Image 1 (cartoon, rainbow, N blue to C red):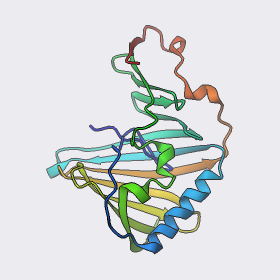
Image 2: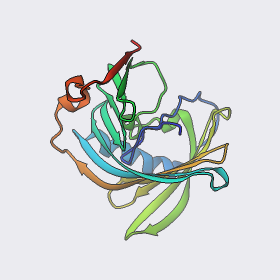
Image 3: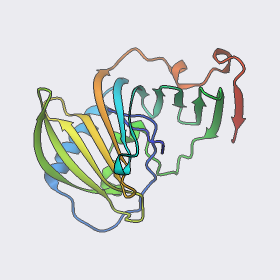
Image 4: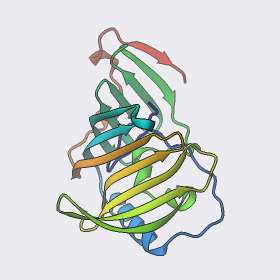
Amino acid sequence: MKKFVLTGLLLSGIVFSGMAQSKGASDPKAKTILDGVSSKFKSLKTVVANFVLKVEGANNSVNDSKKGTVYLKGAKYKVTLPGQEIISDNKTSWTYAKDVNEVTINNVDQSSGAMTPAKLFTNFYDKDYLYRLDGESNEKGKVLQNIEMTPTDKSKNIFKVIVSVDKKNQSIAKMKVFEKNGNHYTYEITSFTPNANVTDAIFTFDAKKYPGVEVVDLR
């Protein structure tokens, strides 16, 4: 399964590749909503969010659901999923796989267009996507503003993303990613704690806490 890091949600560990900008017009109403989410996120010192990642494969080939947690502090993040941890202090990234007790270390490419949990809440959408407001819906007592986003680079596997924003709290409640191969990924935020007590130590990988871990250093 492809990795993807979302949040505010979300988020989990899937990664959107950067997409080249192209000409096109987006819906100003949708931009106002997204700008509100970005502005609120930037005002927070830290965020801890629990989420559920649902995976639906093409032709019902896969149907899976996993619970996870994302910790955010500025550009630093940690995402935990069953059997996996993804950590970044914005200089180094660590990806830990529990089943093989292995951690892979990489340098963070600051010039990369890769999507991270922190970038999800900033104005990445202005360059990488066209977007439009696709009405409102009521779910679990919340009014959600649904925004359909399409990548400006049509060569990418992702062809559509629907971001659902909690109208009252100006925060992302859910996001669904559609791939050309028929796979769907849905990230639903189940709890969102702003300005939680999160220390910098959580954004580094301490090998001492993982006896016998195999280190694959690709820096």
